[in-house]
Length: 108
Image (cartoon, rainbow, N blue to C red; front, side):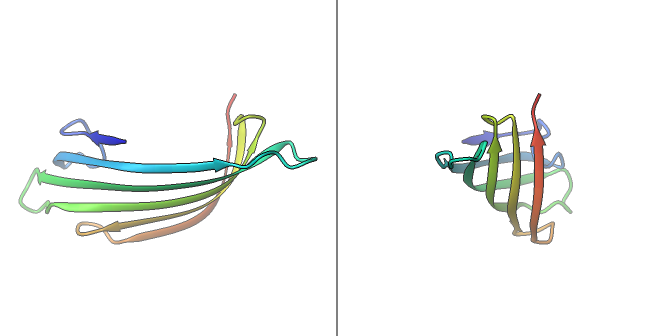
């Protein structure tokens, strides 16, 4: 998936040129006997580039994002419980960031 957000808000509104893309893959394991849901492994890698800042103090930079999720999908994606790892690396502007967490999502 490729995206170009030039002056549309995108990732960072301080830049006139925002573009990037990502690759995502997942595998939904077959149901296990006695469990009402499925286990899912999901991985995503993204890269975005920011240039043409609104002032000279806004340097061009790149952002790389790596995400790995281990999900328990309930009732055909109506709900899920997730364990995730998220890492963001920046060439300038912001400090690198790593997160580990647990989440819960319900759709009605």
